[in-house]
Image 1: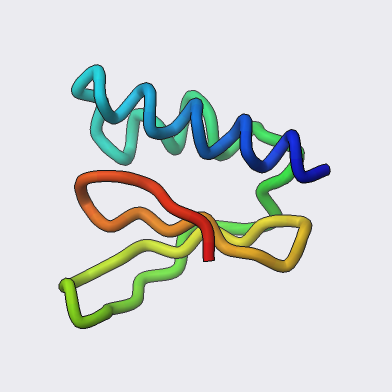
Image 2: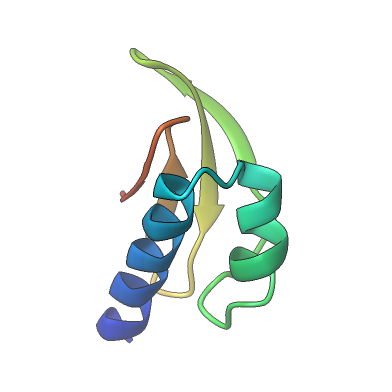
Length: 71
């Protein structure tokens, strides 16, 4: 399962680095991925607004506007 989540993270960051926006990444990668368990949740941090995407592992894939990370 960890390999799937790492692959998902890498795929999202690769698409972002090619210039894809979040809605495009959501539709093409995240929405259909078996590790994603729900819709994005809007949140905020010290760095500004974030989107948290719940994963089957209990972790969240976090989009900070410029890249994705795991929480």
